[in-house]
Image (tube, rainbow, N blue to C red; front, top):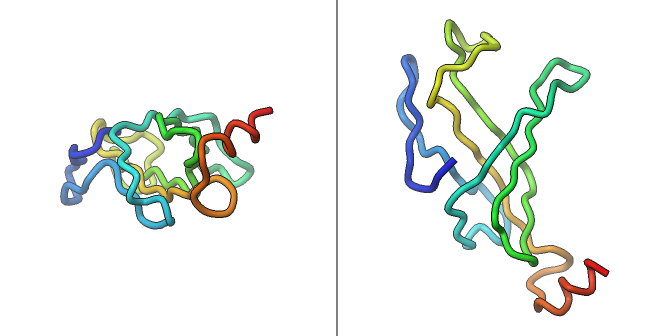
Length: 107
């Protein structure tokens, strides 16, 4: 997913592919996110693992990948180019911290 790109679909209007919906770090600019389907959960829903260059003090919160089904909304096959990502961004720990605080977490 890239900032500034829009989804394509047959039954829905284009929407941005990459949108921060909430979180105290939403003002941090994310230009690109890569998401991978890592399998289904116990309810048959696709689970996604998403990565981006966020820096040491910021992390993803909620992640919601949505795609248009090929034949209908419940189709497990998805229409190419129709997926988008809504996410939240948060500061690691309690609010903004210095890079030395983040380095301490890694030890």
